[in-house]
View (tube, helix red, strand yellow):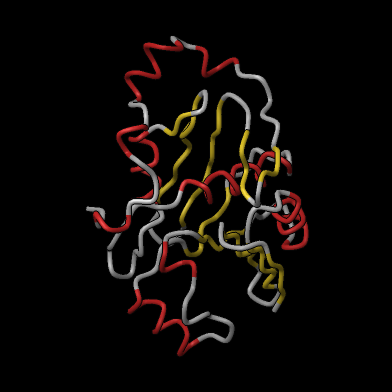
Length: 196
């Protein structure tokens, strides 16, 4: 399912869910609130447990997973997020960069909302990106979406400004505000900000 040349983390270093369950035996329910720290542009420490909730109205899918525990990404959870973030137009998936999961999870936590992000766009193939750039203004030719390092999200209970403010406070990548289309772009590329 995933291109071997696109591996962004060493899968052999990720723990399996079974290892996590055996190791923590129910501790996932009683975790302390994560603390987010900026370190050379990426989140280095997000607490003992990292979790992310998202839905995709285009595919009807919902995901609510713990994907990181005690310093290790959970292989199966990252794999599930990679499929969830796939280019649904082409039904293609590559391994999604877990650093962007960290930025999304940190932003969601900072907004103190139980509402999941609505995913508008995650990974995009070159074909999909080219098609979107012909239709919409502001679609980058070398988009981080094509590297599985970006997501366009929104929430009903939070504004574009609120989401972008939370994402910007992480100082971990690019944050774009798209007011007319009502979404926020979050990526784990270089730190930069823009609005359309």
